[in-house]
Length: 363
Image (cartoon, rainbow, N blue to C red; front, side, top):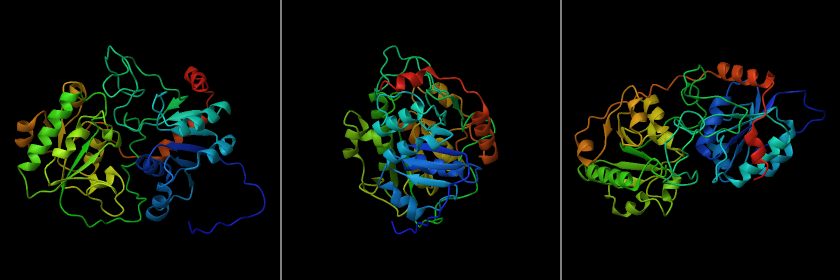
């Protein structure tokens, strides 16, 4: 990186510095949007070394934010932080080992942990299932009970408490504001989620494939969750049967648009959308994209909670569906002042010890 670094003598005056842990480029972008304009300073850990270049070239970083993808540097700096913000707040069997090391260092230094959601519907915030067989690392089994957070406190983007969703603000952080792209319908899926059975995956694939075949002059771009490429995922094994007007999105896939590096950006430029139940719903809502939502039995209570939506459950219902702009009932504009207010309340409070943090130190 050819940026110029300037040094000076002396010590920094006392400042409130927070560590913000993210697991991918989409979460890093969300973190940048949430700290822009904040009164505090932030070190954002991005769990992907290769994405530092994207952040340098494609983003206008806020003055109060620094970036690292080196977990050992974070561990070395841990004592300087007043709190750590994490997008994953439960002890997951699949949690990245580097993130575990960072969190263990923060717990050892008795640094308060604040959890923010990485999803619209998430364990520890607002999601409970009734699975009788429990396996929290499974693609087919659930948690069965309310899953506890190891954080000392939580800030939600979606509980209408005044903070709002960081992507729902007028300020931008991407240098490229206008993208030249063809007309397309974006497909977003997260069938790696245990709430989608193999039958659900088969029905979804059949519905989308038949719909695309019925519109051979239209382009469809599929943004799948990275975990859907797992060999155990049925949808991954069905991509070979997709019609030729469906293109998987990504650098190493069928199609890629320069500087559009997240699913949220692909949604922003779409003409229409087809989606499973996920956080993408609020992005379709923000950008006013007419959308068809796949509804299965397991998530029927979730879809019923939405204010407005167009739903399909099979090929025929998708063919006949009039797409509409979804209204989740959970979306509010982001307020950085309210975000700072919540942080300051936590930083000044005498937070109770979370027992789950003791478990963390044994991992």
